Amino acid sequence: MTNEIIYRIVAILIGYVIGNFTMGYFLGKAKNVDIQHEGSGNVGSTNTLRTMGVKAGAVTFVVDFIKAVIAMFIVYFMFRNSADYIGLDMIYAGVGAILGHDFPVFLKFKGGKGIATSAGLVAIMFPMIFVISLSLFIITVLISRYVSLGSVVGSIAYGVLVIVFGQLGWLSFSQLSWLAYPTEYLPEIYIVMLCATALALFQHRANIVRLIQHKERKFSFSSSKNKKVD
Image 1: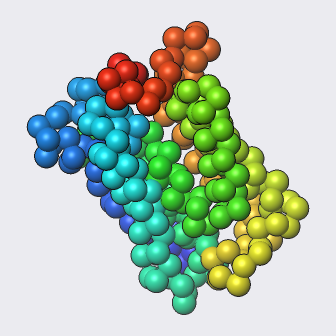
Image 2: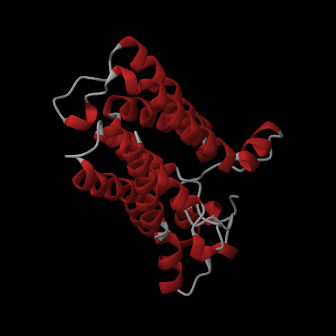
Image 3: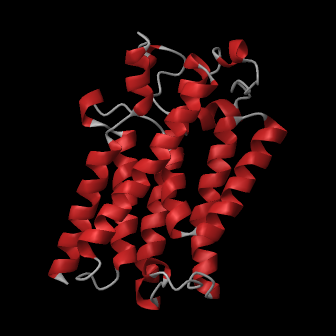
């Protein structure tokens, strides 16, 4: 048990360090744009898209997504022969990457909102749930034109669906070692993933307030309009 706790702590730390690489910030520096003082001030992919264009936004999303993937597979190769269940340590690494993205130490803990990094975690650990959550995100954004609402819906979806799938026995569908979820670890997995969902909602708290007050600006495919979006 002591070793397992150490593995979890190390996994979170590895994820946190990797998560600190905020691509949106570095792209902004390369273009002499201080993204922390543009748009919403967020260094994630959505604000990068709004302030620097589609290409920069896409690159930022991909890098933010991959941060979780890299952290999880570093942990996989480090602990796969010693951990009781490597998948749980990988989940902790993914959550660590989200924390590093949301609260990067070199940006005084003012980072992004963690949606792309969360997507990387869910895609690797819960592929079916990722497809459903992504679909709900896309549908919500297309109908409402609120990226923030889509992010909230997608985040709630993966938190709830992990529990639903786990209780129905739908998680263990693969021969891959990290996807063979042992029943005894499911409660901890539920708690960790619900914490990830809660963190996403916390990071969107201002957006949620504006949505309730009907003050949230809508996403537009016009880059000029997107620059006005908070």
